[in-house]
Image (cartoon, rainbow, N blue to C red; front, side, top):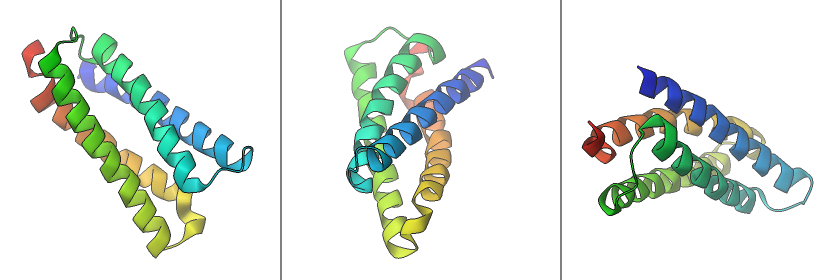
Length: 124
């Protein structure tokens, strides 16, 4: 239960970084929504990587764990990005931030399950 709580805390911070960076790039720098969201995902991924290893799963970085982590993280991030892009294109560009919220929530639970069951198995 403590891992889920720490994962929730890091997830909230990652979400905040993601939304704030996306909003800043779109509204202040006038970058495209797609580019802004992608770069924000990369920044939040880096933060999540550090927090997961250091605090949530308390695992020392090994090559095998890092490979599994990056594979899961990149796969789920690509799924997140494509899903938001498709939903925005097919349904409504006006709901861009709502789609980010929905997909980030779904991906959050998927990530915890995958990380806990398949990635950080050596820490059990």
